[in-house]
Image (tube, rainbow, N blue to C red):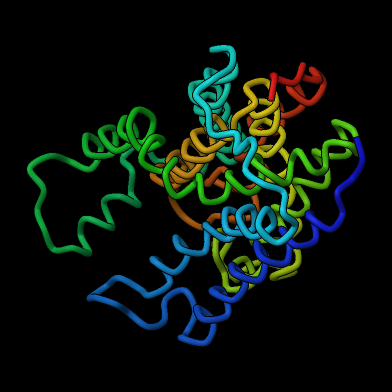
Length: 295
């Protein structure tokens, strides 16, 4: 297997160019909380969703520009059930473990009454028929059981590119080097948003550089799990589901947070401490070099 450099370059130029171009629009229109498309709904919200399709576009353009063809798009519901279990209940468990670890390290920040949700409800001025604790439990259940499948749709915009195309182009480097490069590339693709305060805000030492570095740790660990599932199934669909899981459960810890927190560490799973569950799961799957599924 040889490294197809021209196809990798075309893919990266399109994936980064499309998404970073949208990020530039977000910056030019006032940032994450800038221009609004409706009362309380910032323009950045739909733009970020659209930007997720940059890698998918990169896959399509690279195939056309280099005359690669469409022989295997890796869009199949295939592979051993274990691979699908790792990306759904497995990654849910990893996220919850990370949240538990975070509040074990910072017990003073834990509040079972879900003050963050109570504040959100108060800001709306609407008196709900149920308390914030019950509403929070419902939200958590929905995040675990239903939201991953909804989130998998926009997540496929990324995974059709990252795991459906780039992973296989970098595979000649070897399993572990590929995981490292994929984690770095995926993390760097997010850097403009990190610089705008996405995920970690801007009120932390070393902004935005430490946030960029922390996010690469996150993308490398999560990416290793998604890459393992992709390799075992020969499809990027498990990765899209796993990505949807991460997006769905990322903020569970925030519901229980009270007082000042340091987002670089948690309680959202993108933090270095709250994300430790993904790191452990990544180490397990990274050591178990998968047997590739038939293309």
